[in-house]
Image 1 (cartoon, rainbow, N blue to C red):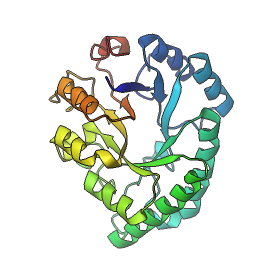
Image 2 (cartoon, helix red, strand yellow):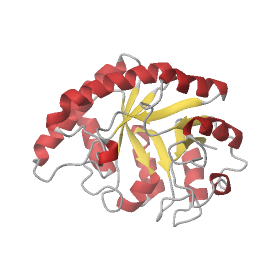
Image 3 (cartoon, rainbow, N blue to C red):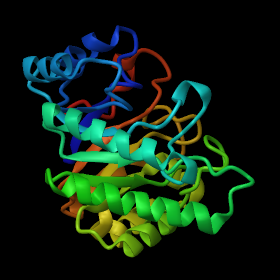
Image 4 (cartoon, helix red, strand yellow):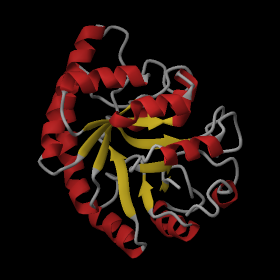
Length: 259
């Protein structure tokens, strides 16, 4: 079966964040991710990982002001210095946590920002970040997020757009973060899409659709999807990034026997 990880920003939220590591391990997960580590001391996070024998699978570059609604700054030409400072900060955390992949959120494109300027800013920022991360043998992922339901105006909303960035940057350590939930909304045909995109996929996340809840609450046939991922010889992690419809423990029926 695929190597499953738990997203601690969404799972086990019944307890405070530091307690979620032990709960993930008790549930059978060997890897964890979360949106951002920066609010916590890196030594504390490292201790939580070590105490629970967990692998830090991935986290995001700093996104700007998340609480104010920003969803990344990589496409914004007036935030390049801030983006670069965020990459430097993320590398410090990645070193401390033994994390080999970081995710870049492209951001929301303002209506008055020309498409070509946003695109070139994103490409230049990704190329710069990839070079810096390569020095530490870290992979940079780019995620396509649906612009129909969750993030209107998100700049990279299809796998094709992400691949266009990857092709233009042309760096060995830039990959696609493929989120089943977002791509079911934007593209569908998940199994065949993953088969075609496999050479570029660095990380997979999932939630059912609609609702972004656990497998079995929506339209995606996860038994088939997980079996297909297994048959592709995909070597990366597959992270549960869903909002449990009830208690997290009650949402893990899909995982029983797989951990």
